[in-house]
Length: 308
Image (tube, rainbow, N blue to C red; front, side, top):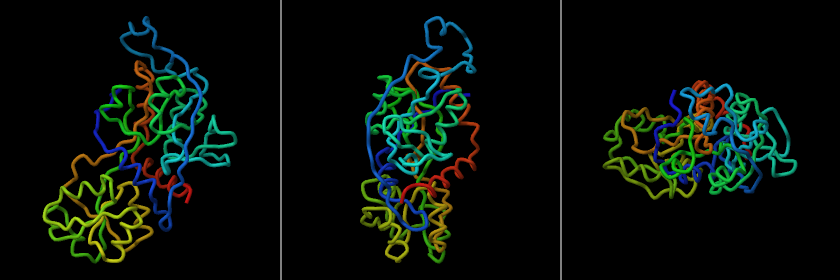
């Protein structure tokens, strides 16, 4: 089992903008935006000089921080990956640095599984996204689970797990569209295609030749409405969010493309401080034990619960 994934270069800001600006859960709704700061972790067990002499790490003893409380760094403001609520439920964990608050979301569900495997109690630490890696290395938090993708810069500062969910960019049209049977980029010749402004969802359209690359919509609801009204022929969209979109718009259909966009895959990786290979291996075991269909169901459930 690999301990460190292949580094993927993705436009992290683009995915965040896409999900912050909209989500479609029985209609088109916005996402709440919050922020914060937080507490502490210790030197992880199993990283002393004498431990490195062992040829095979014993993952059964792997742990993070103080081995009791797993401090999970996140924004708690990036639904459906993570968000803040005021009531405790079976899906939440406490936010350690916000009194009376709890965190829910896809990242939280994965963090709970990791904590259970390590024999620890998870708590969220609410921080600005840009400060999460620094907080990890300063000992404020033990792990990052925050809708974060590994990239070359981040990989220099922290160790990243295998991805626990991967988003990608797909294309949507209407069932009665002349492009509904398109499988290649060439089949889309002449189509008017729209994506969201200032995101990968707009940028990748440049990879399709001989089409009308429309002025992008400022928000995802604007993009979706362009297809619903017939202003556009095709739109780009989040692969993970397609099931909810098709529930809301039964006349829409996803194109079954054999041609794929380059550089569009957006993984979600956990991060820990460097030099904890045994812990990283155990985290990867937890992640890889979650089947793809269960990951999608967890995502759908989080989309249903997320704030409107």
